[in-house]
Length: 128
Image (cartoon, rainbow, N blue to C red; front, side, top):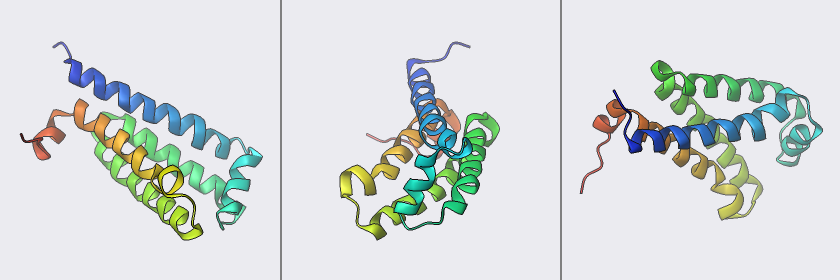
């Protein structure tokens, strides 16, 4: 069966989300890059959490990629993104560039999943 343009758009959005997470968040943490620890310390967290957060992000992204567990991965990732948003609010970072960035990521993640998964579209229909 041929995939519709909507499904391909969803796949593209999902791929952008996955590539961003792997390249900008997971890799620096798992490769021990100093910027990961510096960022966490600047937000009031201990640098000891870098590896654990990186492993959680990787696990959630992998769950998101696999079709049978994609919704579970998205829900778990939203929990992590919610915590990131709360941290940004707590330290008083700018609203649109920092505090809402997790929301932007979540919208891309869920939008991609909604476009590529007909069961999710049935559960959350878009009505005119």
